[in-house]
Length: 97
Length: 279
Image (cartoon, each protein chain N blue to C red):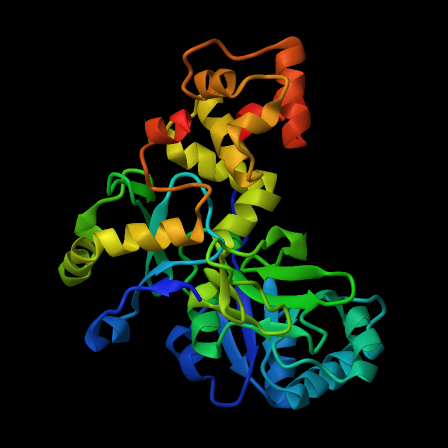
């Protein structure tokens, strides 16, 4: 099953979803935020926006941002479960393995 | 510099109540279901018109109405594109192919976006429609997946593109779904990002995405790393090249490899040497 962050009903009704799916573009680890047609990919190592490049947390509903921040560790763990060959651990750690 | 002008996209929706489509009715979106209504729209001979049928009986009406008009014409004037969200009767398919240049979804195997989402993706006409998947069909015999993109292009990809995830979730291709406004393809408990599929299989899409990533690393090392991850290879899988050498190339600590070294890397990744830096 994809990992989907539990969001309050009112956010779901407005179309917000936060997911880690079974097949994502692999590099680097990230979560996907969706709101109807719109989609953002945020790096799980540094919280930077991968899609759109230069995207901003200002585009995301503040309550969604707050829940993502609270669940950050959980999201990182879920990525590692789904993609053990491309873990959150820093690239330097990976290179030394 | 010559500017390319995108042709205006127009839609004729074969549906009675229209649902979400009603929000978009106007200059370029028409709703019809009777022979008269269909005939009036057909007679306008609009460029770039895509017909979308939501019921078999309306497709039948379309075949009859357009067929009658074609029979009276001196030369064939085929419609451009027909999306059959409700699959047509099998016996109508040859006639439909005579009446339209392109028919998408003419088999019951196709799964479409829900009507409301399809209307928003196609009719809002914002952004690039090629990045949305509006329908898909899985062929369990040939083990391939046919995707229909928002710009009506088709793409066929092998099932092997969807390996089990690290937590053991496997795709069940018999339980195909297109969801999330065309951003997700579901196979039972397994979900794949449309973006990931397009990135791996469509070089033009990949090029466009990479151009948009101007702020991100476009070096040879970064491309090698992305491609290696896509192929699920470790750095130690490039023997006789040492894992440390691959790591140093990926970190751009040494110059872009050439000759034999580049050929060995490319062979392991299954791409031409010149393509390694394009991922």
